[in-house]
Image (tube, rainbow, N blue to C red; front, side, top):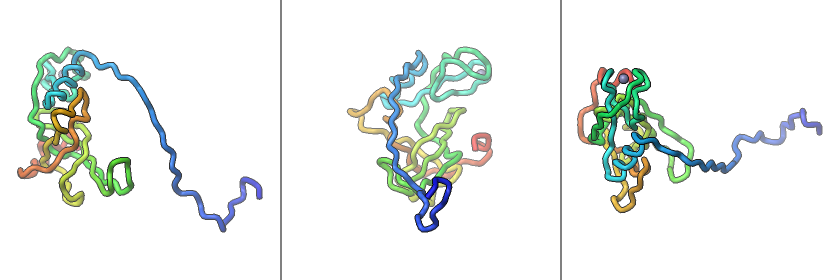
Length: 168
Ligand SMILES: [Zn+2]
């Protein structure tokens, strides 16, 4: 049989397993180093632009819109609002489907961040849902975002659409 002939009796290949790995080194700047050290203490920090007042989390040391340094640092509460989410139905290492990943606008931040949503039925996740960070045990914390295991719902009314509509 030549390569361009399709054998109808043989089922098509629909899935292959292909483990991949990518090692890389990341060198954080001053602003991100401070952010990572705060995570080690169990705090989420951001920096506010002195001109447009947007709060960046993680801080980048400068406002990309205004081109000025962001030096004012804030500690956020660790609570936020789901602005977008995705329910995944296929397995992923360490995760049993269905599981939810969501873009969360942390209270006081003007940027969304993506985290897992756990401790609830995926069917209950919705835009505007209020959530909070769940941290790894203090003894296991390092200077990285892995200190936040996931976010979980909190007993608060959903956020009004107007408060997050620009982040959907
Ligand atoms: Zn700005």
